[in-house]
Length: 388
Ligand code: PEP
Ligand code: MN
Image (cartoon, rainbow, N blue to C red; front, top):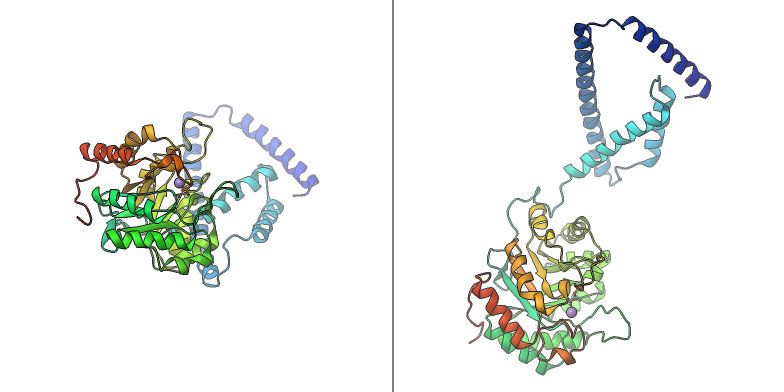
């Protein structure tokens, strides 16, 4: 609105208000009631108009969606706001009109988001997704333990861990061959030969294997060796990788990013699902906070939230989240108690000489005690060795 006409309108409004106040100084209770009713009617009318507007927005949304165009159009929003300000009869200042209508525009966009329910959302699919890998279920009600070394190092190391897992009745073996290390000078993993070693051990004991892949170009190669592709925390928003694993039909273990919100994790999972692969297992592995007592801060509440918001199985990595062997038992119990579908842990025959994460990997005695404690508390079932 131009400054001159705005001032005139404001003056007129003040004059009218003064007159109204004067005229209504003796207003009776009845008159007040009448005016309140009038307000209620206006509110209802506004509400009707908002719904009518939402309906039109929705139809525009459908058309735009069909054309593959984004719903949000900043130019169009600007145009609408300018027109409204031009027509503003007062008494609201232009800034207030802009603010009010921006809220309305935003709510309309939110409406579209809500209606386009994410593929991974519970709102879209009510039943739990059970990911079955070589006949073994994750998310089917029986918690799983995924265990193994941080990195695949040697065939001997893998065989020793294999024997331990087998004796504990564990089916899922992990072992990194492509390691996302903070320093480029640290052990980067054995690459494909590491995956081959993992596969050999798995064949010997009948394990299902999980290993991290970092590069979309390695996905196809990895499928020759592993059963579940891990997308690590540092790659949670590597969108090309998410699309690549989404284009396979192989189960994906998606770890939460170091500083990712729950919403970002859900959207990362949606990237995978949007490519047609809904065999996704989410993994809470701790997030970065100011707390230094643990390597990361395990966001325990993420577990029930993810279970509520999505239909996907959720694991908790107790090793990377805590980085402390002395609290792994209670933390694993807590994870299973809040509804995790399983727990991931690192175990190594000789952690002190491990090529990565040597401080946090359990030795065999610690791992056995860990498993005993979970069984004693009935957090996991007593199991028979896979191959006896
Ligand atoms: C891992 O599981 O080997 C790993 C590197 O974990 P994260 O990506 O959660 O740090
Ligand atoms: Mn590790």
